[in-house]
Image 1 (cartoon, rainbow, N blue to C red):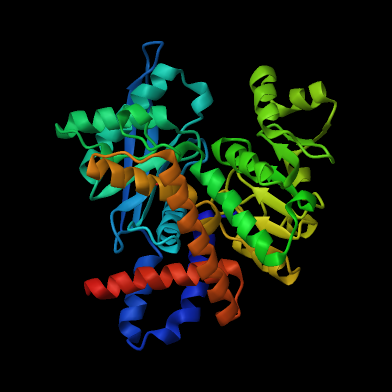
Image 2 (cartoon, helix red, strand yellow):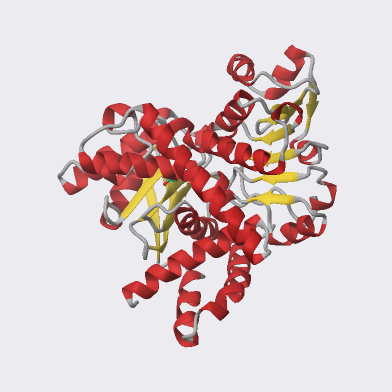
Length: 421
Ligand code: GLU
């Protein structure tokens, strides 16, 4: 299996070599470069909880805090069987870049627990979430590290974590977690923010390339929070989603899919294989979805789904990365040779952390914004970030992926230099 962390490190090394010339102090640049390749701190814990059957079970938990030169560490916590030290390390680097790309005052972090959440009851999830926050309490806080939801975690999990954290520190501190329920200081618009902002990037890109939404076809891998809301907003903007998938497989319809209807049917039938049957639509494997001849392919599930093994089969003209790191470094090189445009994850899925930032700002102010204000500010930030990357790519004659990384790295290095680290 591809080592995601090694891949990300390799990419960062390549990107750093492209900006090395901008820094006359070579010794300092080397020092910052090596710091950027690894997390500042890695926290590993074994969490033991009581199961519903009375037995005890221990789970491996992690938090990687990559860089905090631009502000507190920031990033989600995922519950997934693939969670590992290397995975959170890689994802924490991407979070530092992501926050820098959209210009919000945070560094990067990522956490996770190695579990299959489907195998735990709701009460066991609650105990585990609370155990995680209690164990992490010395290392997080509104001005230290601000976790949020990620794969398989949601506002409920954030509520449990907030409760355990506040109990531990003895004060209210809602700004410690984002992605909370509204009743506990969450922000309006946070749930759909990642998907919605991805659709804004798609719209901006389409304007730039003069693509007409109605005839622009999309295949979206993943129907979780990100995949669903991306698909919802993209189709609202007029784009034609011909295929959507969950972990079982993909539904395909040449005429385009009705996204809200798909969600209702998935809730009714369980998974997309049954929904496809009910609708009499074609059912494909997740691998087949990746090779559909669409205009835009949108991996919106997990990392490393487009690798050197399947990249030759990709027929889309553009890949819009909604998952974190769905294209490996090797595969990315092949896409470049094939002139397939990659709209990078650290731009496309930055809407989630951007509204997390608004949530944190509201918590620190003890004031709440209207949904209109949240959406307006989100749209401003996403459009500005797209523009900056587009211009930078043009001036430097690099692609979007490299432009986003370079802009982000330069912003982080600037903060490190100003601190005199
Ligand atoms: N998990 C999301 C991401 O990867 C959101 C992180 C956050 O809001 O801090 O961007």
